[in-house]
Amino acid sequence: MNNAIKWAGWVVLLLIFGLDLYLLVTGSAWLERPLDAGGVFPIGTLVGWSFLIAWPLLFLLLMPKARPGQLPATYRALRFVRLMLWIALLLGLGWGFCGRLASGNWANSFANSPRAWQVFTIWSGAILFLPLLAFLIWAVVWLFQRARSRTP
Image (cartoon, rainbow, N blue to C red; front, side):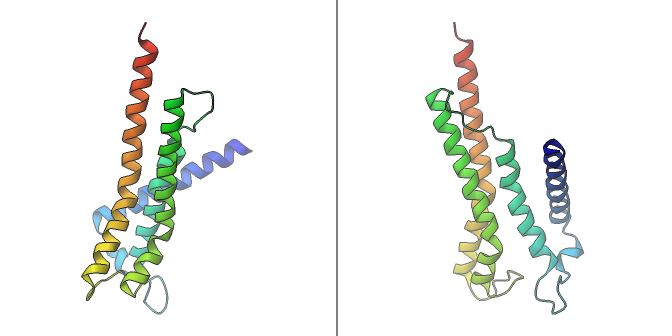
């Protein structure tokens, strides 16, 4: 049962990630349609928000967990990498609220506030960049660990 739930979670996560990526890349007209009756919450905000949650979550689920029996450097690096991914996930969870507070609307249109736009852009970039940086750090640690284990 536990394995079935795990696979179902993976399928749902990959479907959300794939659909969000498709809609964002193609610039679908669906992104501008309102989700609510009042027309204040566009579907694009929900799509972007779910993408920015799924992105670090995907890396977090793929990244191996740090185990106390590992080499000390590997253990510390993996803990640091997973911490970066958790920070990115928390930033992703707060992304919609950050946009709402900064822009004053759910459509994230920053008409008269360039400073708020800069803060929002940095917030969004951090969510996208941190998982990539975490993966790069993990890859370097993994390569060094493999090279060390092959050295006679």
